[in-house]
Length: 502
Image 1 (cartoon, helix red, strand yellow):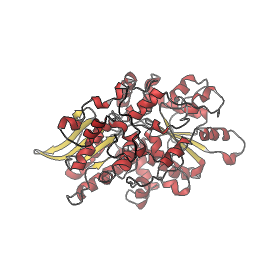
Image 2 (image 1 turned 30 degrees about the vertical axis):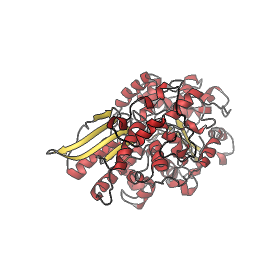
Image 3 (image 1 turned 180 degrees about the horizontal axis):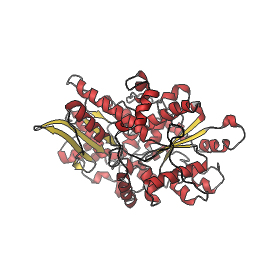
Image 4 (image 1 turned 90 degrees about the vertical axis):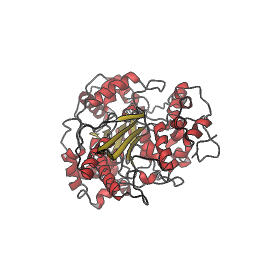
């Protein structure tokens, strides 16, 4: 038995599991509840995990699997070690960019405020030899602003013959990969073309920052610290502004709870390579939840960054996060208006209400529908619904969205789609117990910490406005399209799979 869109001649998925926590077939699917027949019904009948969509080989080509399996952490250590040698021609600038959803993990782990946690993390990374530590919030600013403009344009162009709506977010790499590799048309035309924060951060570091520092992009080794493993898959196929100049935007992706050979590197010889795989039980849980442990990558940088910090005997001097503007330091951490993510729905909803209907929206009111991870937001006037937005988190809800979209029974203008149930804070690269389950106590602390970070609208960032002019020659220039937007492939078309050092 196989998933409906599986491209393999023989399905590698189990028909049963002894892991009751992930036996999602025991829970009635939305299709069963509605009496609908389709993808949900087929998945349930076949006893295949609803979340298996990313854990099967149809989302990862054989070529990519081979390339990824050959990668390890040695390059990162080589950079650290070469930087300590006398031959300066081989030195590289080490830059680490931290996602805002990763910082609450460190804050909760060490019982610190998020500001103190960011300063300690920054100081620790610099004690290892990292030169710059950035916050990726500025990249999310660009992604949200471009998404806002695209939604307004789609709304105005939408018609029954050539539907431009709904618009589906494209910031989650797990969801985008599934849409490209498995769903294809008619889903991919609805994906927002704005690049994800990770992709934009790669362009900012390897293009803007490199030119500002008079560096060649290949002289910078750029690492992303992110809350989920799917960011690694995204780095495989990054299409960044600097690609034509022979340099990837992201050279390495670490999850918040990952550290790898770095890992215990603080108590070992720097560069001594360690190989560690998660337990078989943990791997099964990761796969069942739709994340990329199924690639069997050797040496995903052993251990955890948090463990490094706990076990390190290196004297750490706290330091403020850097900015892309030379000696200017990050004054205050900020986030976007999302409970556990970058809040695309809230920001785009407010912008669209004002731009399209001249309505000012203050607090966005969410209404939970089928479950807490499927919520709806509407703008109504005189009894008429002007805008209907939704947030769909987790693959059970994503399957429901896809099913209705294919049937033409889709009432929403916009959907914020995330692969992880609960949003980015609940990414499988952090807040996990040793056996691969969610640490619910730690996650709850993280949610409280994240909620306390001040919210700032992307439009209010003076740095973003300066970058539009200085880096991209204006808000509507051809460089904006090149640097901040992308196109999507469909099933059967090979990805541009560049080598990536994990």
